[in-house]
Length: 574
Image (tube, rainbow, N blue to C red):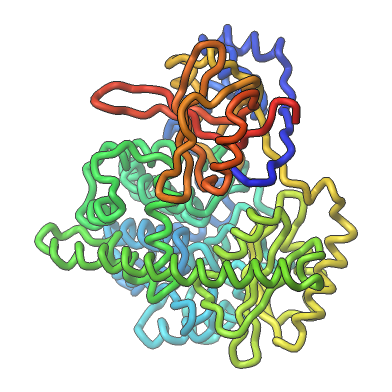
């Protein structure tokens, strides 16, 4: 909840279609409205969405080159060739590495894994890494969550006689890397029906295909937990197969049992015995896993996920504690850099007055600049590029707003860049420090063509009005059935008018606010995260408020109650 409130945008809905859907499914009308607003007005499609099943996953052989990849891997296993799984240092890449390595081990493969270290090896599939794996006796390299733009590495593999299979989900270049197989639903010639898989989702499809070909299809649910963590951490749209993976994986994470490594991670995150949702993964599990690759080596997290020997309890707990410690360091670095970046935006008109914020400094920790870029987008509602300069080279992370294709903008700035890649909303780049001003001018020239003032205005999606008298346990449970929430399936936000604060607001941990709200005689507890700076404002104006909120079901002493999470509060006459 920001001090300067966003514009509330009401989402349209066909009420007649919602009524028909509510009757067909036997759900509350407000739940049917939410489904219709998400494009799920067909009863069959909506039912699949509400109750996803592993049977809803597509045939993995619909992915281009999947058959060739499966045959080459199974052939390598039969011939006892050494296989290397080459991953990436973020959560998506680590979880992709873990599930594919574990699947290959179960198939009896001679398998190792390699995840590059951010500061030593750089990003993605590199020729030097291929050379290193070749020297280690590897005959087949399978990349996960990387490699789609690794043409140089693919050519080096071919020169060395190493076969390469690329699995990735990032946007391909004009030409695909020369490899035995290139599995990526975003391939222009790939007709796979779900284009939005995370890297771990593509790896899971390979595991699914290997299991089917080897008569072990019953394995697949065992990989869902780790795949859900990677999918939720990568902020891909939570629809289609991503929803199946996330929903089923969260259920399994909540139920258990787990191998010792995952148990230790959940324990250090304070999640043992809890019902785990997308919030827990995004803000408690994923940051700890990511901290390994950001601050030191991603192999800490990989070894933790792979740990299964119950006799190694002390060692596994030490790994989990190490991850926790790296996350604390990450938070401190992030806070320092974010404060400096905000100061640049607010004090330098050449930066702050532009549509795309481009900030740079010497020595900023490259492991956290992506998070800083995200937080700049949240704070200023503008695309952001954060650059860390070292030895004459600026390496950067980019985050964007929905209206601006960051990868497309970088493609137009390509002559200025040493390298770049990523997605519409998140990308990475490198350039000579002498060209930072040119990049700022060039990317803003693209933005000035494409963005207007409306695009840069903070907005709050409001799904509809919901008076306090309409909030029941059944409505809250119906809304919760749409979870997990995230990109492509936003958490529903409702509006209530003419509300008064009858208790509080009180500060919580000096960052948040707690209060009780009343409308038409009904009272609900409410929390406003990161809104402590509005305490005096809300205390002074306790009545005649409009509130935008989401519904949460909490438990206390065995009782379930509904609590409101506030997205914004404004005066009724605003």
